[in-house]
Length: 261
Image (cartoon, rainbow, N blue to C red; front, side, top):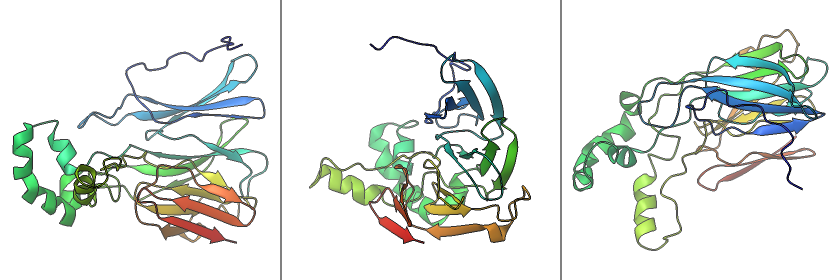
């Protein structure tokens, strides 16, 4: 009948997240942030993973995250560790393309005159963005204990992969032949992870790459040979799809990559 059963409270009303909640085996796994938000120049916040009893709403445990949490967790069994685990990608959501960024700071009639800086941002993207930390992390789903973490190379571009590079042709199409086309994707830092039947975690990130992480020896330390990376192209908004022996990922440009194994 839509009756409110319980609520978890507002831990930081002034923050923002694009994450979501996942329900599995009597628990609700929620991701949010403390501080941070989408406004350009806003200081990066910290993530928070908080877990509740499905029936009573009792807070069972929580974990503070060292980067923002902007996507839901995956729940499943991962290689090298008994019982259920949570896998989560962390990182600040990407910014907006150059011409959209300019709308925050200068009058609209001046924006076309910034085109030389736009093309400079395409060739030297790190000049126009600060480094943003990101990581993939796994926790014990019952206790919240850390199982492993893969600290990734910081992301340093003003927008998600493909958004700045393709903004001009997309916008031209938007104002001419296809008014339903979106000039930018503006995705999350990463798509929701998935875990396959062998315990490998797959996490697509805003750099247009899919990361496959597997703690093969179960020692709690991820080494480079336990991570495989595949470049799809643009960043990701949609979650990956998984079927027996198959993984499908779709990037913001509509490119579909399907893997078998």
